[in-house]
Every structure is written in C-alpha cells, then in structure tokens.
Image (cartoon, rainbow, N blue to C red; front, side, top):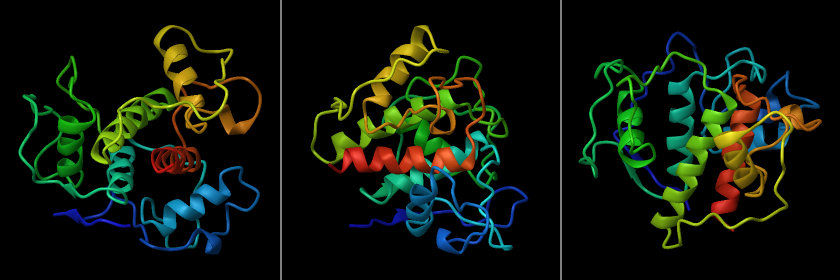
Length: 220
C-alpha cells in the first residue's frame, strides 16, 4: 500500500535537475552495480530519481538534506506522512535551515520524528555530504519509527548474522553490528571485504540500497 506525503514540496534538489519516476532499467550507468536491483526499486517507488541523460550517477555522494528527503519519501510508502503536523516533542529549529529551503519541511519533520535529540550546535548542515554512519543511524531511527507506526515493537529484530567490521569502534561498532543484522542495512563498502568506511560519504547507490533494505525489514 502506498501513502501520500501531505504538502510535499516539488522544487527539486538544489541545482540538480532530476526526473522523478524514471525506471532504473533505463539508466546507462548502473549495469553490474552491486546495488542495481535496489536502485531499480527505489526509483520505481519515487524514493530517488534519475537525471535527464538517463544516468543515475551511482557514485555521486549524497548531501544530508538529500538523504533526509529520500528517507521521508521512503517512510511515506508504508505510512502517511504529514509534513505540516505539529511538533510531537519540544525542539529548537535548526539555525541553518531556512523556511524557504526546498528541504525545510522534510528536515523539520525528521527532526521531530526521527532525530528527536536535535543538534548540539543547532545546525543540521544540509549541504554537507552524509557519512555512511550518519545514514545508517538515520535509518535505524526511521525503522523504529515505522515499526511503531505499523503497530509493532520498536525493537529491530535481527534477521541475519551481525557483522563486526574491522574499521569501526565505540558507537559505530554498536550501530553497524545492529544494522548489519537488520537485513544488511549496514554492509561492507561496495559489498566487498570487511570495512564499513564509517566516515566516507554515502553514495547514491548505497543510499538507495540501504533505504530499500530498511523498508523490506520493517515490512517483513
């Protein structure tokens, strides 16, 4: 079942001209990509879009505001999202996200619903590239949110054996273990080896794949 995201801004992503609803099968630059199937599904669900020259640009890094936009779109495929709903928690608006920004409504909604603790600096850094750790952390919170919305426990039940990556420690170790066991939302860089590359920017291909894996796990 698909739901409408209420009051969705359609201004587009910054200076990029994207084509919504273009099926990934028509893209010229994803054949053989390890995330090809997930890219197909993400574009068919209008979670992410392609470019006018029939490319997907799988290796292009994703900005934080773009990632949030994709995640909110993904949530809207399983539950109704009202971008103009009143805040459910007391939060201080981000200092660097202007009300006229194309992503304002989605970032604000996400702050109220899947990033309740806010930011120590008061900034969201929308133009910064999102790291792989940040992406997986947002997806963990998104999965918990969705499960509660669907009448389930917020506990993310492991579906596969967890992975202990060789280049993570502390919170990143805990996070990636949990989310690798949750339908492989956290997976090795380019699906090879034993490194997660926690500080590396998340590219468009992995971002699309991780979001689809999260949706599949919630929907099991």
